[in-house]
Amino acid sequence: MSEEFPTPQLLNELEEGPSNTPFGRVLKDIFAGTMGGVAQVLVGQPFDTTKVRLQTAKTKVGVVEVVQSLLRNEGPLAFYKGMLTPLLGVGVCVSVQFGVNESMKRFFAAYNRNVDGNGSHRPLPLHQYYLCGLTGGVVNSFLAAPIEHVRIRLQTQTTVGSKREYLGPLDCIKKLIKAKAIMRGLLPTMLRAGHGLGTYFAAYEALVVKENTKGIARNEIPAWKLCTFGALSGTILWLSVYPIDVIKSVIQTDNVQNPKHKNSMIRVARYLYAQHGLSSFFKGFVPTMMRAAPANAATFVSFELTMRLLG
Image 1 (cartoon, one colour):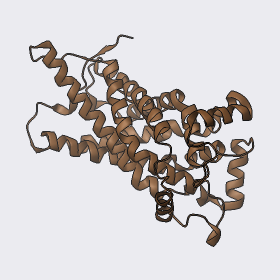
Image 2 (tube, rainbow, N blue to C red; image 1 turned 90 degrees about the vertical axis):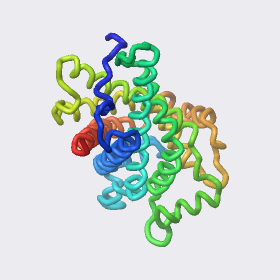
Image 3 (cartoon, rainbow, N blue to C red; image 1 turned 45 degrees about the horizontal axis):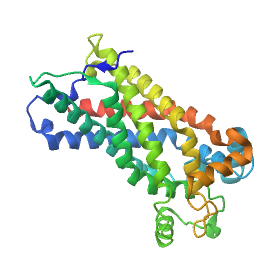
């Protein structure tokens, strides 16, 4: 496949009107991204809880065992443990991802026109789409790391009632801040989100542009195709970064006061390999891949349809 793709509309930059001023475009990106994030959490949370339990299990267990244990010991609502934090936080995170990605696309489009020197719209290369997503991922990591840390602490908490270590999201946040551990896992989050979102957005834009080359405008692509593009992009994302996510989960479930692995990715990698070899880096892989398609289909179709409604 050629690396050169035509720029897909870029939010109609040349049209006049309040919603197409620089500030108006950013607001649209953020709001549409928030809608995508909310859809992602509602669809993906049960899969994510299962994944985290598998990733952080002390013994080797399977998907069926984890699901049965959750239902038997904690009830069906256990699949939505810790959902309040991502429901509020992931909406913000996804809005940042999409907002930065869209802004970077406009930046590269303007840069390419300046390089051409004739004001023409030179096609965006695929590597620029990757850089747009990578930038969004790195920026978003400073929000995602603490949000995911809180969510994972709540998801892996098996005790109930007054015996719980964390009484809820706010209590968890307070205790992690007090222990100066709220940002634990930032480095693996940056590595995962940077490369992961780079491949994520590059794959999605490549699929959208393929439709453009057939004469189909971005706002005319049917919803079922947007869902398909989002599902494929999400699958590619997780295939490219999954072992890093396992390492991040172990770091973020380590002892808060005296971490066994000293917040070191290398120490965690050695520990995981010593447990069960390379298979340790793919614990929870099945529910993650089951989640990737529907959750990211919901994310992209919600984002795109919201952008269309906003005009």
